Image 1 (cartoon, helix red, strand yellow):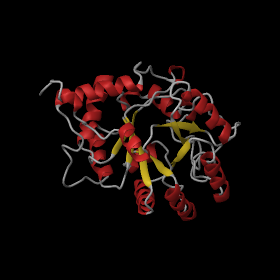
Image 2 (tube, one colour):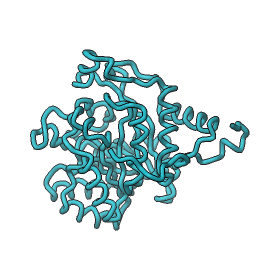
Image 3 (tube, rainbow, N blue to C red):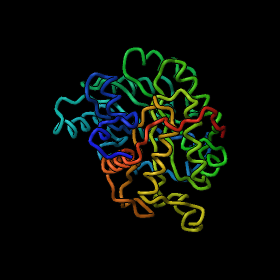
Image 4 (cartoon, helix red, strand yellow):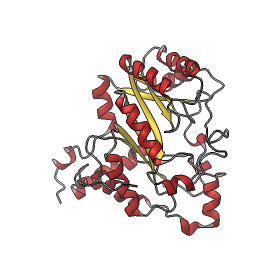
Length: 319
């Protein structure tokens, strides 16, 4: 274990910021959008009530409201960021709810409107694995040829027992199918994974790195489990706290590093934590900003001489 100054220069994991700048040739900032979508897990097509942990208000900025047009949300977001970074370019991030859930022509209008805003150089579309029809994928394949595009799938877990327990409304097989079809079109594919869902042991969480490493993913977001007021999961925790293990920051840092070491080295890690407003948390948060947590991960990786993919398995587990 070495702590010399050379260690701090080692790129110990494939970080999103560096990768994105290399992809675009300029620095770019994501601007979150609420385009007025709902979710098939809320409106009855797949289920009702939504995922047991979900409250979309936990990650929507103030300017992000469906009563405003996409152009207005982007312009307000640009004004917010351009004060500090006037040369910044922007990615339209369709984030709230399921952003491929709607009529094809309506979806195309929304994406094209975003791309018509000056200084917007690409689109990121957040969705579910069960909401990628072939007709939309055909359009996205064409869109990908003329602009920067990432399709992000909320997968949250690779275990069907967990997906059922949290009322996700889709299976791991649907996740694999959506990722494979999207990547086959040449589109960059992202995924979201929650670490710490009830019923998943530490060993099960780490095994997910191997499962994801088998898939043609470009980017990955990791999030610690947060319990949000008013959600069914917060009620479950209040009734049966023993069913949950809420990580301390130190525990979670080591979990993230162990996960990274088991993850394929070319997968780009966008983030490790989520930051819900403290007023919405049913259980107090850590009081750490994202950049502070990242600094702690990097420091611990230096101390441990850890590297992404170092412990990747030659034979991957199956969920």
